[in-house]
Length: 484
Image (cartoon, rainbow, N blue to C red; front, side):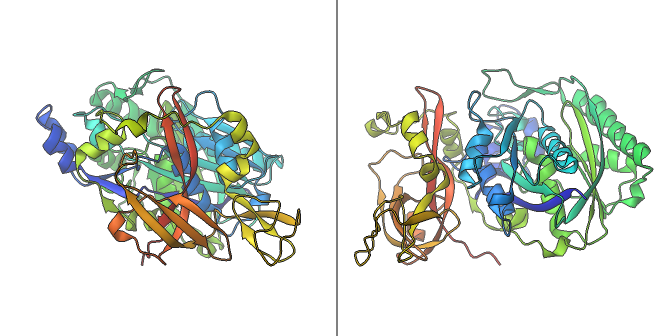
């Protein structure tokens, strides 16, 4: 049987209280007060849809043999590259093998479920063994708009296969329309939409019931068959209306995280699915409906394996949070409010493509080497063992550092270095089992650090080159937070 083998989720550490946005911009449109409850998840200045997808993907790989993953599909409406395979960056960062299929899915907010359906069809046919699907979005609403309040950043990832399935895929039904609700042209920075009444009355009112009834008719189902119902709609009044129309009880309805995260675009329905799987029990039937240029409706049934899967998940990410203050910092991070970062920010430091190609496994995957003679790991990869008592030459094997933790050996805060969140923090990390390297630190404040503190590594955007319009990526050190 085909279905979900593993899952993971990621919500950025920073949360922006929506009341701060309203206090700053509510004078432009007082009606946005209706969207000012709760907080939105905000990607750090060094995060984007790719780095968040890597974080969710690593979470989904818990207990999974990387070598058995035969494909990766990436879904997003905010991909950093238009002519570079974004999924290819993910495969390298996740430490997957080169000989796999990878593809980008975009253009619609239901791209996440569409990618999942393509992966499920691939593994069901026997043509592919395991396929990872990552969905991630960092959408921008213009300041003073309701979308600025509503949108949030998040990602989810799933490994789909036919062995050790925790949620069996039972069927699907899709409808597709060229429906002009949300739209963004090629060079547009901000999302735009037609009026809310149009989106609600013709969009959600028509398309969601059409997809659900189509699925039920195709497989002889009724709403009472399901334990958990997931559908992508952030309008609270509209959700109540649809719940009544479709017969969704409060016990069935899966929360949409609107007050904790926000609307996460192409990742929304899959983030909700990842959250639902954390509490699912064997035999539970789960209905998932995405929305955007139509709807995809999928249904799963949890197997006896469901309780055996352990990951950080959405709940773990939600528990690890920090307030983002002030609101203007968010504007600078998103390049909405120009800020002078000093002369050092004007250096031309982009990575040459030929150099990245030669060192792609070290840079994107954080692969080093381990001496076959004495067992000493080292990063970057070395031909000669760094152990002074060994010194073996060309006796080595590849060694992955991205899944290892370490301790801070030294660190400093630098107010002179160019940084979107000064001071720039960097220092030396000694990995458990061996290996030492100097990293930038992120998702932390200088006063939170101490030598000997445990850290992990996180795939992040190293720079954004405005001259060429490209991002470069590497790994940064992140303190390990103990979340109960």
